[in-house]
Image 1 (tube, rainbow, N blue to C red):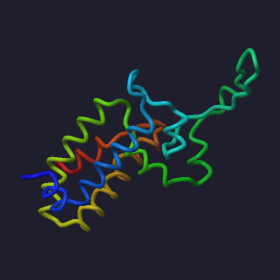
Image 2 (image 1 turned 90 degrees about the vertical axis):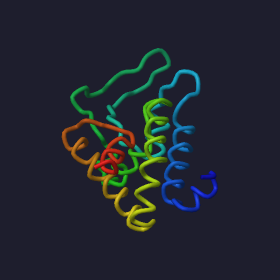
Image 3 (image 1 turned 30 degrees about the horizontal axis):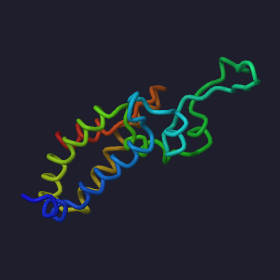
Length: 150
């Protein structure tokens, strides 16, 4: 099956895959393979933050006991499902992308685009919300991949 025909038959899956690649390109370096926390946070993840003051010669942590997801505490709960779109490195993105391209397209052909969109949106929230509630800041589409597989 040709690429464009497959995209036409599973537009939600293709859109999600494109979004995963674009977010990955914006937040990961090509050489080192690790994401910059500031770029992930700017594009929607919840990062564990601390109060730090930067001086020209050093950085000083004000209250080491005061740390956490300040963005979530200020009511930005949209960051939880958006964290699904971020990945740790290119291998992580590649494996999740291959899974979504094969199984997500199958699910979309079976259920239709709207049901698939609602399902993966809900799966993204269900997969990461428990992680955040126990202060484990996970990222990635693996939870949604497991929901699709299940």
